[in-house]
Image 1 (cartoon, rainbow, N blue to C red):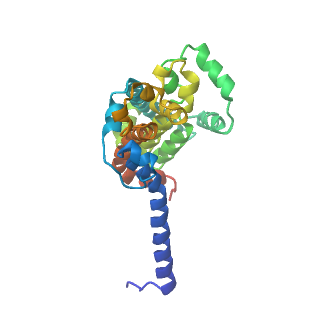
Image 2 (image 1 turned 90 degrees about the vertical axis):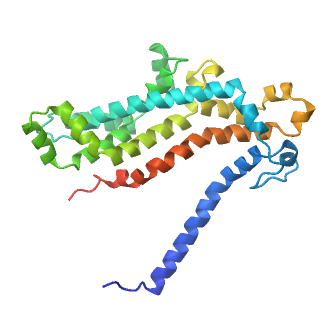
Length: 294
C-alpha cells in the first residue's frame, strides 16, 4: 500500500530541490559567463556589457586560439598525457587490486602489501625528494615525468579491490575448475564484471591528468612542453604579449586579452564536459557497489 507523503516530507523535498537547483545555477554561472565573454567582441567586454549572453557575437577569439601554436602544442601534450596516463594507470590499478582482493589464506603477504600501499596515502615524501627522484631517473622535461610518478593511485586501488572482494567467490572457483589461471580469471571474469567501478576510476584518472597543472610547471623546463592546464595558468596570470604585438586596430575591437583567455579556458574545459555525461551513470554505482557486504 502506497502511503501519502506527510506535509513535512513534502516541504523538505521542495526545499531540498530548490536548494540544489540554486546551487547548480551558482556553480554553472561562472562557466556561462566565460563562454559569453569568449563569443563577445572586445569592445563589449571592455565596456562591461557582457554578463551571461554574448554581445556582438564573434568567433574571432576562437579563430585566434586555433592558430596559436603554443595553445595547440599544449593541447597535444595534455591529450598525450591523458591517453598514456589513463592506459598505464588503469593497467597498474587492475593488476594491483586483483591480488590484494584475495583472502590471507590465498595470498599470505596480502596484509603487509595493503599497509604498504595505505602508508603512502598517509605519509608523503615532500616536494623536494619527489623532484630529486624524478630528476635522477632522467624524466625531467619529458612526457613520462607527467605520467609515471602518479601511475599508481592508491585510492583507486583500494576502491577497485573492495569491488573485487564483493564479487561472488563461486565465479572464481568455477573458473579454476575449468582450468583458468589467475590472469585469465582476472581479465575474463573480474574485469568485465567491474565495468561500473572501472568507469568511475577511469573518470577520476582522466580528470586528474587533464586538470593537473602544478607538476607541469615544476617538471617541464621548456614552456613548449607544458600541458594545457599549466599553459592556461601562465595565460591567466600573464598578459598575452603575442596578441598585443600582432594585433591591428581592426582586430582590437573584436579580440582582446580577456576574450582570448576566455576562449582558451573554455576549450580547455570542453573535453571533460563532453566525456563526463557518458560516464556519469556509472559514477554513483561504482562508488557504492562492493563497499557494503551482506
